[in-house]
Each structure stands twice: as C-alpha cells, then as structure tokens.
Amino acid sequence: MVKKNPKADLRSFHTIFMQLGIILVLIFLIAATKTEFRYDTGSGHLKPGITPDVPLVNTPPVIPPEKPAPLKPMVAIEVPNDTPLEVDIIEFPEFELGDAIVPPPDPPDNPNEIFNTFGIEVLPEMKGGLQKLYSEIIYPEKARAAGIQGRVYIEFIVNKDGKVEEPRLIRGIGGGCDEEVLKAIKLMRFTPGVQNGNLVNVRMSQVVVFKMNN
Image 1 (cartoon, rainbow, N blue to C red):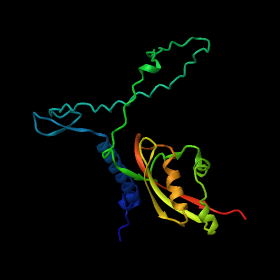
Image 2 (spheres, rainbow, N blue to C red):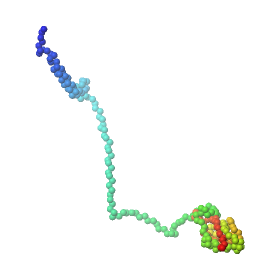
Image 3 (cartoon, helix red, strand yellow):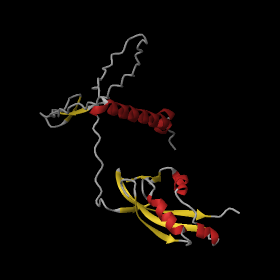
Image 4 (cartoon, helix red, strand yellow):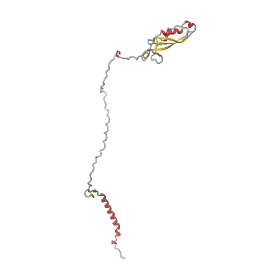
C-alpha cells in the first residue's frame, strides 16, 4: 500500500478553505450593500455611481399655518382723582304751576248711573257725621208712651252735588220713628262719591237706633 504525503493531503486544509470562503462571501456582501446603483439612460443598465436620468417633480413646500399672535394683556390706566371730569349738564325748561296740563278725566259712559258702595273708589261722607244726623231726629212722644224702641233701616241716593234723593224705608219700628228718620236724612249733606275721577251718584243705606233711657 502506497503511503500519501501528509503535505499533499487536502483534507487537512478543509477547515481553512471553508473559513476563507466565508470571509470572501461576507466581504462581497458588504461591498454590494455599500455600492449605489443608478440607472443609465444611455445604455439602459444599472451602473454604480451614476444618477438615473429621471425628471424630477417640483413639489411645493408645505408651509404650516401661522399661529395667531397672543393677545396683549389689558393694562389699567389710573386716572388721578384731582383731574376734573367734564360732564354735560342738561338744562330743563322751567315750568310754573299754571303751565302744567292735567288731562281731564274720561266722562262716564252713563252720567245718570247709580253706583253701589261696593267697589266705589271714594265713598260719600256725611258732613257732621252721625252726631249731626241724630241732632235732627226727635224721639216721638207716642213711641215713648208705647215703649217703642229698636232700629230703623233706610236707603237713599247721594247725588253728584252731595244731596240726598229718593229716601225710602227698608225696615221700621212704627210709632212715628220711621217718618222722623226719613225727614232727618233729607236734611243731611254729603261729600259726593268719585269713580274713575268723576263725580257719581251712589246708593247708600243707614241705620238709626231708638232707645229709651231707663
């Protein structure tokens, strides 16, 4: 059997060759990734370092919208107290009492209308009061003799002049007392009633008490 020369045995360099091959492949890959290929319009091939002849599109730059300027803070200006203020004085014409114009009250729809005491603005008032009315009444002697006493109710109208019209008996006690009250009420004078600024006729009632002193 022929013995091989150890120097001629290639299997002993197998590991070295494999490492060199891997190193060469890595160098090639690194060189390929670092090389920039451009398109050549003349030859139609990719060549390293040549910029392709491709028309560029001019895109207008995008300008961001301008932000509004911040508002300036308001500064209060102090006015010295001793500065006089100019104020326009409005002058009004002077009026005397006789120049005032007072509109007349609206005339009543029915000048002869008779109002009741309920709802009237200003009620008629008896001049002198009840003391004046009782001073005009005399207790009849026949009523005293018969022992008649009680209340007499009458009704009447106070006209626009304050005079009594149409007195009538509502309820009486007799003995001449009813007639005495009707006679006395005709002598009375009143302040007239007022409604809506107008003098009006007002229907009223009155009670007179007859009582004997024991």
